[in-house]
Image (cartoon, rainbow, N blue to C red; front, side, top):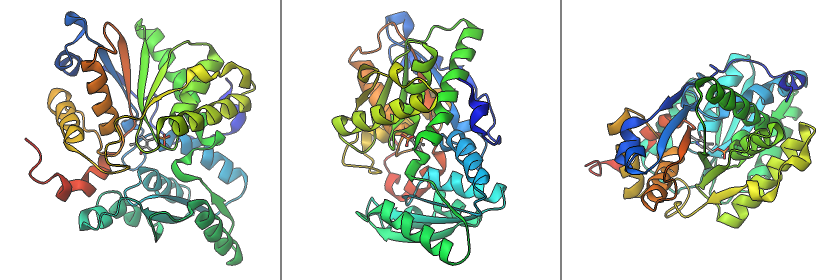
Length: 339
Ligand SMILES: *Cc1c(COP(=O)(O)O)cnc(C)c1O
């Protein structure tokens, strides 16, 4: 896989660390008792205004935007979107304008949710924010804002929600290469990678990268929004298309895509006590700060599947996709629920 062909621009702090989680492993019954040996790939440490998984995607997307002489990035997300925050930061870093559309997807009107966390950072980073109600056709909204920018003499570059298209997903194909190189260097045999999956680009990029290089490491996506059949279809299509961009579409097969969407709870961005328990366990065993919308839900799933024996005897790498900035949007929601 020859990523230089795609002219990414480089600003992420890479490689991100690959670290063992001995105390969390032990809490999940651990290798000594036949349970999983957990590791974490720290993609919360990619360095762009707090970091997170969108930064790797943005290296390729910004490369494409600059090649197209764009002067304005246009993107969308939920109110507490980490993708939007990282896009706003990337725009600032390259002197571009940034137009963002926030969908009021969760219905929360708490001031910390609507103004704090990622929203505060979006403003600090100089993005122009528009808000639209839940259920808005976000692709249409993106096209409308792009047309406005164009009419005002600007040159817009539209980044889809989550940065999840074939260009963005290249960032996670490259992460697959980085992770396998790290594991080889340490003599670590990985049985499974677990990640949160939303707009699909992260899992799809990993699957594409692993398949194209022939690494034979399965990836389990823990869904945060869509039901399983929809999520798996989205991941599969994007993984195949991304592998196609790398010249080897046929190497991605449908069996390589597995999502478990049983941990969404009441819906996207809505938390429950099991999510809070997962955040608490990761924080108190490893000092690891997860987020309530993605990595916390993935950890909720990992804990439950681990208790059911799914990972017995396996070395599992949990991809920490970031998002801790969004935690501060959930302060009132979590009030009194930390035991
Ligand atoms: C966007 C996001 C994800 C999901 O990644 P996708 O590529 O959208 O599937 C996971 N974790 C965090 C913290 C995110 O911001």
